[in-house]
Image 1 (cartoon, rainbow, N blue to C red):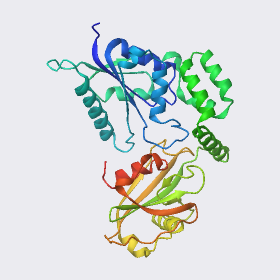
Image 2 (image 1 turned 60 degrees about the vertical axis):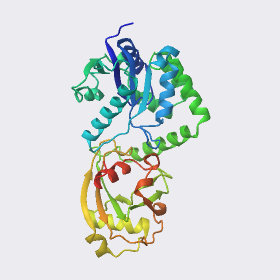
Image 3 (image 1 turned 90 degrees about the horizontal axis):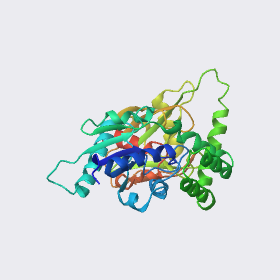
Image 4 (image 1 turned 45 degrees about the vertical axis):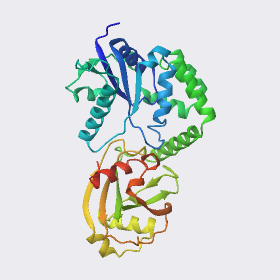
Length: 352
């Protein structure tokens, strides 16, 4: 069968995969010999906005397709790069290029590639970022959104929610079955449910403010001899995840003073304050609107580069930190880091 394109590319988070996504997938498979599905927000710790790992989301997608369609579907994880759009575009380009090189069966002819998605949806901005490919817009099926599905699943009775969503044709039956098994068999369900409950209570405390609050925090990116100083979070949100030492700015406190205070409280690092101040190489602001589940939170990060030394300064967890330790930069695991701290480190150190 001769199709319009050799490859169609569909980028999404699919948290979870719903009937609107399925319509785009089916359109892509109708128009192209192969569909490349790039699963965004991959390699992150579970959180209220991204509860499912990329392989779990791939299973949801494949459960909705026939064996023949699955054969023509190529699923790959795509990591976010929230503070460098060009790096994200480059990652998409290189990922698609690798798949095309591996699967294009007529090398004497230039492959025909199309980017497919919901053009009228606010998340479809990426359709304009790749002018080298043709663009195929698909109507948003019944205006379905993953956000209310996700929120209801974790805050109401899951079985009832899933039945309702299937009846309303918002969720494909195979996805509902997958999510039903997930709530019964995977501890990740309880983890995310408890995190959402914590965040809900946190936001309720600010619900009567005259304006939606914007929080200001600080984070210390302390590096020595190829190691970065990290702390393990003692409590929610992100209990058990690793994070940069930091926290909220007190009233009447300057940003740098707040950063040094939080650094001392959480790590007990044995470095004099004048040395820390003299080691500052860069200060940067990180303001991704979705960076924190607690609400709009803007953080000011200070990059401190200590002089190389074979003996790293002694540290010990304190205050909100269960423990503190120096982590080799090459061993940072984004799936174990809190919020956007992995991306802050990558950006402020120029590693992207």
